[in-house]
Length: 209
Image (tube, rainbow, N blue to C red):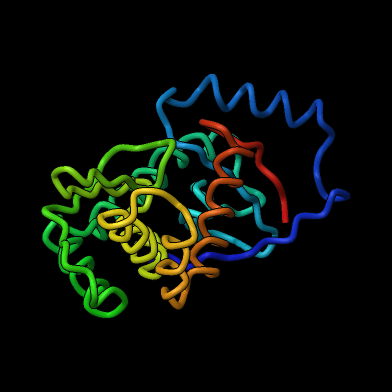
């Protein structure tokens, strides 16, 4: 999993709104329309190297502050493709997802007498996971590919509970709090959602730090 860095952005270093809007429009016009949400950050201390990783649902691309706008536009699709390839390599198989589920059942829900028939990835933009009790199938949003293990495990654990408890009542919550990293996982997911909402789709204006 890539490192998640916290950047402190001060208002006094941001360019004027009109400049940001003009820059954003120009970049959007010259880039493919189907790129995932991304943000370009120009760093004064960076001389040549370029790096990219996903931060809160948005792909951050760090480039030298002196890189030309043309080089930046050429670099963006390459760096996004690199992150997507890296995430694809980290994507667990359905068998691995099932193994995680069975380990969580043994560790946290030993009294459960119902097991999932399958756990697999699904393209879901509105939910992190879903469970169908009739056929005991669990689906996990592929937005979580590459996320920390404690986050993926939390969502799988959440859906495992639904095999026995359909709603989110007190009984459900009594099971859910057994997961040791619940608060940490929920904080990560909240940050992920905020990152996506603030960026929407496509380019987020570049900043200098």
